[in-house]
Length: 486
Image (tube, rainbow, N blue to C red; front, side, top):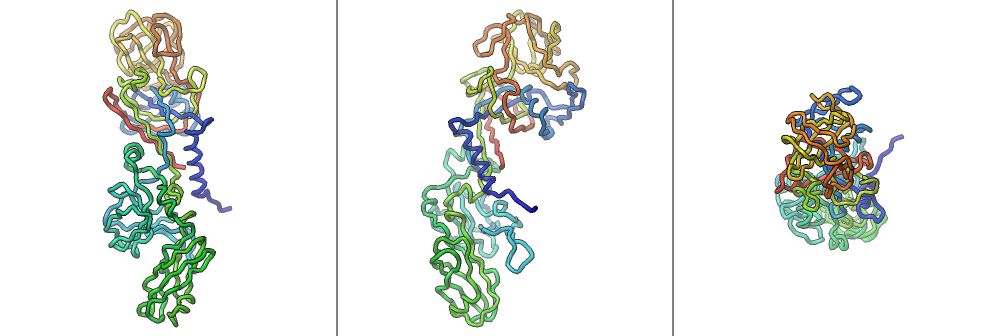
């Protein structure tokens, strides 16, 4: 049975996801960074090969249970995403002179009258939201293209921000939709995507069911020349009228003189044009372009295909509110989106959370180096150094369920415990945990061990991205934009 999921369903899903960030009993989302160690081919604890690619070319994560547990193992830190960090967005399409833009049409993908082929855009797109029918200008205004002057190139950048339809000198007709605010440009404008929002002035001026664009589909022949006026637009709406110009027996121009209201379907027939004075005209056919529900500009998110949601998160140095959460001593190669994680057995609420384990050492000899293996001979525990805080003698580390290349023992989650010496593999540094006591809040702990602040496997991993390493610094901000398509 042929079936589709409509764009409205996709927008519904994007709305539900967006609302989850602001609802009183909604979900809690965190952006996680992890994977301080390089990507490499490795062997998992069950002896199977784990091909992760390389730092220059990491592989795409698998969508399975193990792939959704590994991110907790090498998680460095996580930051809460708030409702102000989220917006609907659409693909960015910059206006550029010399480009032939698609027009807004309600019927892309339908079969043309008397034809076995479907209606497609000038660009070849078979659906509206795959068509290039809107632009972002240099002034950061967004416009819909309603008419492209018979598939001619656009050479005049639209600039007016009035709610009326704009005609430019190159024959194009545009509809102003909205302007990106300074905040949107800073937080929700990337190379490929941009925020989409409804302008209240444009929305309030929109007319539901108006017909503003009528196209010549077939020019016909044999008609009496002249401009024939006061021709009704037929359909379920009222008040729409056009004038038709016939030159050398064919229809050469159509002008909407009154847009009317309430149309969900509309036609202007050859017979109507004949009755208006174009006697003997045969074969002419016009296309009335039906506007979106509410009219052009009434709901920019729906009209422009806002079934994308962008999350914008900035990592500012060590995140001053909690300097031991976001280390700048190591790089990261993995970005995750985590829903409803727990911390210490309860729902996580902190703005930032540390993902590493930690231990306070005494009697340290030598210096631990990042990414080196650490061992505890008495327990058989193995881990990797994420950061060595020599001032406070705190060693931050991770343990994973897979074996990294060249480290035969690495790949078990046996806990470091007791007052037993911990030794670095490559540096030969060592130290003794100050006590065997375990605490949950690492920010104030002065002795013993500390678990990660985010409980392993406690939430749902919704997104995983492997990427080339990003080096961090105390005076550096990483701005991470996640775009989810529904």
